[in-house]
Amino acid sequence: MQSRLRSKTKLIAEINTVPFTDVVLVLLVIFMVTTPFLFQGSFQIKLPKVAAPSPNLPETITITVAPGDKVFLNGKEVSLDDLTGQLKTLVQQKPTAMVMISADKSVTHGDVTEVMSRAYVAGVTKLGIAVEIDSNSSAVSAISK
Image (cartoon, rainbow, N blue to C red; front, side, top):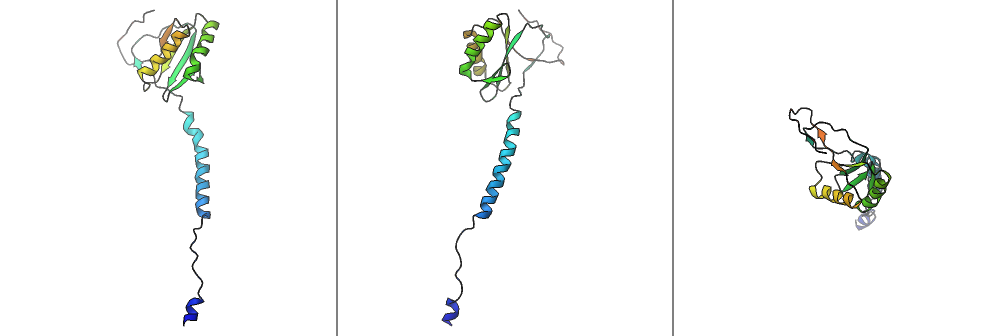
């Protein structure tokens, strides 16, 4: 009787990692394909709405402040440290240009004032803040020049 029990094969107590590896590789491919789509829409900003007439603006240099501490100078992303130098170069090339800051609603007041401060250090004398004109409002306000 004992010979029958001993002749049975032993169970193999190893984990088969092949299915696990397949699942991990499929997830990796899925994340690699979907990641670029997540960052394509990150540059859109939502301007605050105000009731004001649309002004006639001179030539403008645009600084965009997006959520996530992202700053763009004329559509190109720049670091906050490089903003002053690049803005100084643009202001020297276009001394009559107005610098317009477009900041998303969710950007903090401190981030906008930091960008304004760096613009003043770069020699900007004409500075404005971009807003979306609310066409539904009946109130009219004057823009001082």
